[in-house]
Every structure is written in structure tokens, then in C-alpha cells.
Image (cartoon, rainbow, N blue to C red; front, side, top):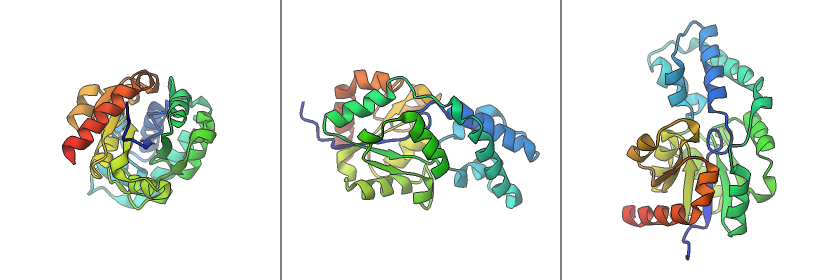
Length: 230
């Protein structure tokens, strides 16, 4: 099969690293510290947004922003205590290696802060096969805004028409879709296949291992979606 795709953009939290529920717990504890009782289910569904978006999303745009910086700092501190619990999702490193062996360029486009990204990269342990890395600190707005994806494309010198995005949240699908990039969804972050497809994912797989086992199929499907939406 001749593949038109020359690069793969990956989200990291919940896509390559099993960290979504650690983030959820850290945010839940941070909210409780500042008197906000926010259900874990709502927090979980918001993971994938950056800290510049998640507070308005969960507390309402009309909430008092006086504690916002302290809330973000509390989340960061609480989450940092769980870095030793971070684990690669099944097949994550092998997927990156296989993409590289096929001549595809691996680009990480995450809403994580730089300190968090360092912990994620240490856990992933795949630096030799990663071409470009971008974080929330590189973009004006986090997902679902497409800023981080645009930065990733610019730094990797790839065009939106020659890449696919792999992510686990609806925010990934929306960020990719804003640039007409087909998104392959993974359910390992806790979002259902139906919801990812409803928001525009080109195809959905269980985790990186499942995607690896169906990589040709996934890239073909993504290419067909790209042609349909072009």
C-alpha cells in the first residue's frame, strides 16, 4: 500500500501514557482544597484540555478567577506526586518505533506543561524515534483550539494534508478537525468509541497496541476521510 501520510501527530496523556485518571484525581483534590465539589466524571471528560481552558469549562466562565492560579498550582503539585505511577499504554513504544521504521515522522503534540512533559517522555522512553515535541507552553491556547497542532506542524515542517492525529479525547478530535487533519481515536483514555466517532474521529481503536495491529487499515481509513473532507 502506498501511504500518503508522512507524519503522525500523537497526543500523549491517555494516548501513549496511562495518566488520565491520575490527572482526574489530582484535579478533584485541588478543587476540594479550594471549596469546589466537582464530580470526578465531569473532570475526567474534561481531561485533554489545557489548564487555560479546564477551569472555565468545569467551574463556568462566570466563576471567580481569584483562585485560578492557585488551583492550577495545586493540580500540578498533586499530579507530580504520582509521576512514579505513570506507565506506558500497551504497544505505545512499539507503535512509535514501527511508524519510524516505515519512514513516518513521529510528532508529539500535547497540552501538558513542560515539567509534566519531561515526566511523560521519561516514562515513554522513546526519544530516538520522536522527531518533534511540543507542549502547552508552546501555544497560545490549548486544545480544543488547534494552536498546539499548528505549532507541531510548523516545527516538524509537515503539512496538514500529509499527517494524521492520534488522540484519546474529543478535544483531540476537535483540535485536529479545525485544521482538517483526520484523527484516529483511542479509547484507552476512557472516552467511548461512539463519542469519538460522533465528534469526527476517522477510526477508533482500543489502545496503541490495537492501532499497531491495524496500522495499514487505520492509515487507509484516515486517508479516505482526508480525501472526502478536502
